Amino acid sequence: MTTESSSSPASPASRAGIAAIVGRANTGKSSLLNALLGEKISVVSPVAQTTRRPVRGIHNEPGLQIVFLDTPGIRQATHSLSSMLNRTARGLVTGSDVVLLLLDASLPPQDEDRGWMQKLSADASPVFAILNKTDLGLRRAAYETAWAEVLEKNLARDPSFAPPPVRWFEVSATTGQGLPELLAAIREKMPESPPLFPDDMLTDDPGPFFIADVIRGQINVRLKAELPHAIAVAVDQIEETDESATIHATIYVEKPSQRPIVIGNHARMIRDIRLAAQKELAAIYGKPHKLELWVKVEPNWSRNYWMLKKFGYVGT
Image 1 (tube, helix red, strand yellow):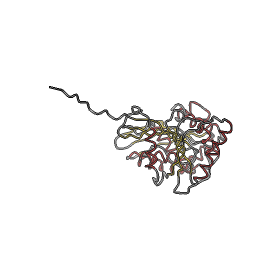
Image 2 (cartoon, helix red, strand yellow):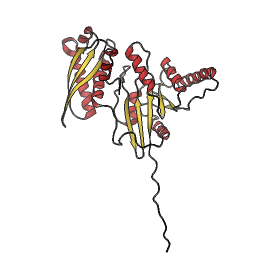
Image 3 (cartoon, rainbow, N blue to C red):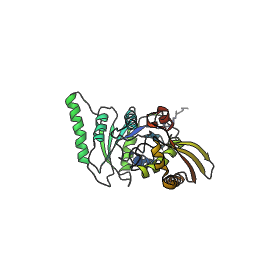
Image 4 (cartoon, one colour):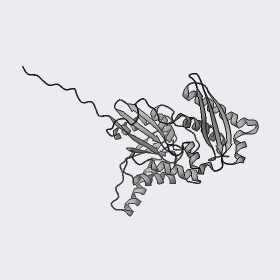
């Protein structure tokens, strides 16, 4: 009697990798991350530098994990905090399996866009040049020309220059146009690897930092002209039950003259900030959130490493 050996088919290899989302400020990086994940894990605001910390969003499918890394937006460095955020964003590109360079398709290329092109043209990671906000306009030719000019200058300096592969995409994080095709292309770039995070995790972003970002976002919407970079928020305590949560947080400013601006006449400004942030947090977490807010003067907090660490801007 002969015995036939049988073996079950091999399981498909697991794949996992990192997709870094980079670009200048206000190109829609946080909006893109939220749209790709179908969840709000990064705060969105029309105010530049809403994202000051690297935020990881984790997309899980059977046998596949994509770790999206939302980075601070590059802008012209006018103060020490801008310089620190710019360095952080540039440094996070290293080691990514694909870099998603987000560009505002509705506007012509800016100096910061060209700076990112220069940075990425010298990096080994594959580049996806993503033209976002196509629902507002499309200037693809201008961006392709800018990329070609960067490559031409590099080649003139070094005849052996070999740029990384680049693919162009037209999307709208607002309407969802082009996102399925973009996600499919990102899937293809993920290498064979076990998952980098548990497969039930949506983000590794600590809750207190996210809550602080929501509060700061509401401050920025109201005070961006008066205090564009002087505000930071730290969550001091969270008291939570299944039905509700109470958040104690401190709003930090750098000068005594800035404190009454945040509080407002008859405390109206701080009340409006509190009510708007409570409403946003309740919508995100699905239960009422009560905020207790204090405003404190901390001179030169943006130059204090330990304060920056407290806010999650370094060491994350």
